[in-house]
Amino acid sequence: MAIYNKHDFAKLRVAGRIAAEVLDYITPFIKEGVSTLELNDLCHAFILKKGATSACLHYNGFPKSVCISINDVICHGIPRKDEILKKGDILNIDVTVIKDGYYGDTSRMYTVGKVSKGAQDLINYTYEAMMSAIDILRPGLPLSVIGYTVEEVIKHKKYGIVKDFAGHGIGKKFHEDPNILHYYTSFYDKHIIQEGMVFTVEPMINTGNDEMFIEKNGWIARTCDESLSAQFEHTIGITKDGVEIFTLSPKGFTKPPYKV
Ligand code: MF3
Ligand code: CO
Ligand code: CO
Image (cartoon, rainbow, N blue to C red; front, side, top):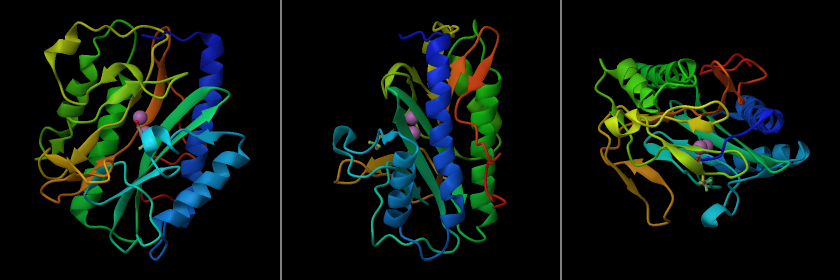
């Protein structure tokens, strides 16, 4: 497992900030009638303007620069010209950039117009689950606190936590050890968090159960029961006595509705 030093942290801060700036930049474009391909192309151009590249484009054959996942799509949604945002939709945009050989990976939810109370609740709980799991991190704790905390936050809701995807170590590679599970398993009680670890926390939570399937294209993951799914993601680094979030929004955006 990679341990990153001060120099690496400085580079990760830059990459993380650019990824977060992409999500800030795209916010006012999220409107009824816009296609996910248009959003992809805007993000792509912005990433290049920042002197970075998209880590997603051509990654294991992924065809676009960002993932856009609407309603019952859990993750890895592929932007399309004929996929048009409509009122009441909820969507996640997931951006990973490479800057100077370092990766920044972050995603947020967005809403189109007014959404149902059930949808807004799911978004609020998913955000709180991610932030609570990040805020407690420090050297010496077991990695299992992450999944434990996510479960604690949502325990009074009948939500499903997606088990087929996980957070991941990141840094000079897109995906590396450790695997970050968003549900509790005692297996991770023995894995202890250390200063210099860098990984993502990115819970995917469904209003229905946790069953999913992947479309024939090999990418797009959907809930089997067609329930809504939400996700937020930050890239973080473990410091001497706590945690640093590399992908905080420079504009102060947290969860929708955003004040643009
Ligand atoms: N950004 C995603 C993650 O959080 C990975 C997307 S891979 C892609 O790990 F190929 F679909 F872009
Ligand atoms: Co990730
Ligand atoms: Co991501």
